[in-house]
Length: 442
Image (cartoon, rainbow, N blue to C red):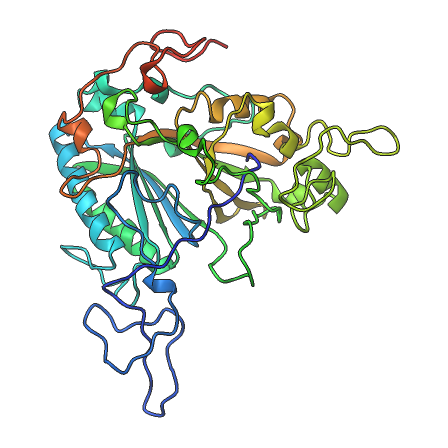
């Protein structure tokens, strides 16, 4: 869980389904924030109770939604495998259906066919739906030559205890919204659209702090109670696009303006963690629990002084502190955009919570983003004894669909030329140390 920060809150937009309150006969407002008049036009005298439901993300654009948007209160992750006998033709039809549904739902409109009415009373609520392709997708569709080198399987890590049934997949879908019913509505619509073309492989549910829960914007906290995300790259950074997105002249060409996402279900061993005294918890992370400031002093955004020592000559930020190990300047500049959700899936038979982090990170090349950081964490991160990686996936997420296109059309209909060059990295250049057609040795 590298030490990086959330993105700015999303700018509210306009919705076809406005978030409106209703008044009873006595004139008292009966609905709560989020109540609405439905798909039909609301009475002219109705007064909005909140703008939360009206926030809208755009489906069409250079990049897919759900990457640079602000953290959402509710999320669903799902992976699908193509059904036996389904291939490129069926995959193209499925992505066409999914894209049409995503565009409608993100605009606050009902699904075109068989809408369940679950989200009838809400606006778009900042809904985003994002699609990606797994390593196995290309073999199933006869598109092996278009499989990116960056999509080679991740190496094994010492903290891995992976459940293969809950890892990988041909197709990946990320859904996020600031209303739980809107997010679930989208999940059901995507699942129904899969029809006979694809079968659900795994699905996970997550959450974040609700917008407006704090008096002012703050970095999110995880289920360990720690401020989590202080050093996330920001869109205003001059090298943000270079770190997160495949360039326009990258290879393969269909991945232009796309990104690669690593998805990890990381269980937190909360019973063990919560037994630690506060001082020891802070030493594990390298930051104060109260405000996220580095142990070397200052505020949350103060640069960490890694050389500062105490009266005994010991480093104030321990050498195995999570925040020290994950710093980009300690990992060859490796950086990734983290956009996670917390999760809680009940309790084990012995009463231990099955809870933790749905780790989601975006980068232009996983070999330069996730992999070097995770390898270094493997070699001595103090946090490792309190977490367990239980599932994993790596997916290629193409750029956004232009008007009239569906996501992945340039791959599935051959609208972008260029295949995989052996050992090719970002921009088609050879990556030092990467064997032809595979990952770097070691």
